[in-house]
Image 1 (tube, rainbow, N blue to C red):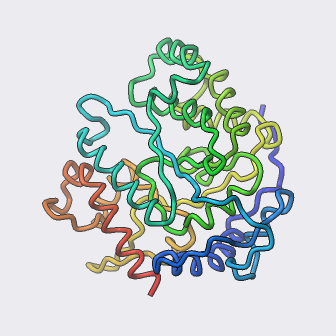
Image 2 (cartoon, helix red, strand yellow):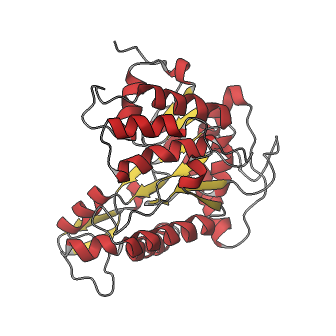
Image 3 (tube, rainbow, N blue to C red):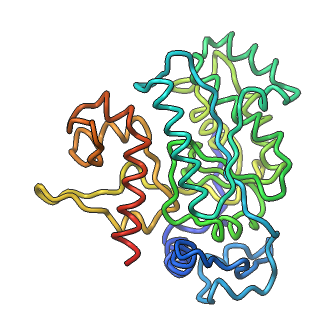
Length: 325
């Protein structure tokens, strides 16, 4: 049975207004090496005021936690590679992910199977996944929830896919959004960019473990579909969700006009980051908007997929040059 969702989550248009006001300041100062250590603080009950504030974000009324926020990802290599990429291609993508987030003022952390195994319900999860015949790659996608649920760093709570790269999400904005209570997904049921405190992560993770079953009525047993199932069968209040919206750009933020390819600044500037997923990389190659990477033949899906790290580096450089002049 589906429940109506509360209306306390801000619309995308409201968030885009705020991001336009905040990010130009944050990115400009960050790339010049002078990012402010403080920004406009918000009470938990009025956190969404951030999204409509017209104040200079460097002028703080309530200090945020000191120190850089931490963006985590999960990576546990699959022997021989997977998903159209070699092991080396995956490792290169993780390194590119690290450099990108660090250039935006974040600390980064790479979680592994060892972190997931610290969770008291790891063996229980594994038994369920084996019984449901979940493959190695998708097992790893479930493991990341357990790994994140063991994190206690007060500046943590953020997790992204390692093929998700920042566009507007500076460390300054990350700290502001993290100051809001509850669990937040910025790509709806696709677990591309998530934030929550220790309690919030454990609420969702325990529900995921409880819900997994070989008989679960989902299209495919992955963490994405299980998360969607949970959301559709509980209220946001029950789940402690305070943001469930899409503020991620799907794929490489380019547009094509005839033979001319340019950065889609209007689209990119409306999103926190870009998800360079397998699917969206495939589309970029098919549509002729995959960045020109040395050694990659235009239209060659195999080499393009394996060079997503290099393509991501090019995309970020071109985004900064085109959209922040």
